[in-house]
Image 1 (cartoon, rainbow, N blue to C red):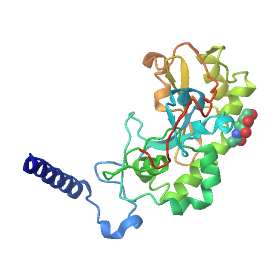
Image 2 (image 1 turned 120 degrees about the horizontal axis):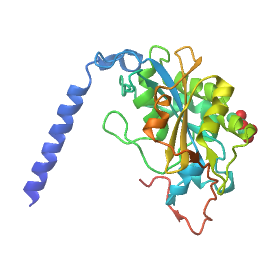
Image 3 (image 1 turned 45 degrees about the vertical axis):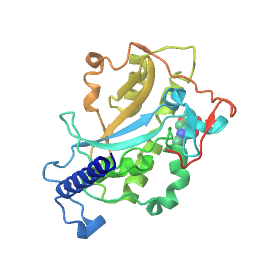
Length: 268
Ligand SMILES: *[C@@H]1O[C@H](CO)[C@@H](O)[C@H](O)[C@H]1NC(C)=O
């Protein structure tokens, strides 16, 4: 038994070694200074700013931890928050993990207040990083998507501050609010009306993603100079049937502390 187990472990180690050696074609000695898209992943075509609706996401909260903004009680976010800024191709695919640049939270320490408020994690999970590990939500977004925004964005700090800036300039929550689309657990809104409100505000068509009839995400897209443009997914909005004709923007009522299974922040 014991030897079978160690053989298995050895095989795992070998596999991981083989994978990690073959995964990087770029000279690693240059570290974070290498800003180059892998040959297999050509330069991206446009950016999608993906915004999550906490009312929909947080309803699935099963347990709590300090990094999960759904667990902030009455301070849980009530407006669209940032999921990420994603470089995409016009054919609907996207590059990921474009070069090795391990996430370093210290590089963005001056942005923490803004990130906690506008770009919080809405879960306790640790998403995978590009190089076989588990990391923070921000680490995942930077390594997987941020590294592919070169040559427009060339480092971690620029990725986060640029994303915060374009988010602050395009307040989707406000656009919907002014058109009468506010968080509600009873109202249903026409999807067409929501799309029109955004079209009128930014002169582009967004992409809307639903979880059943609840709006889960709204994506607004940008050229490389950050002028708004249509998202690729917006064209087949009706054919894709991602959202029904009438959608909701659920309010999130946090469970009280007793109902939550509280976990230490280091869990998971
Ligand atoms: C966006 O608009 C909403 C509704 O008007 C407002 O409550 C919120 O503070 C605004 N968010 C930002 C980031 O300016």
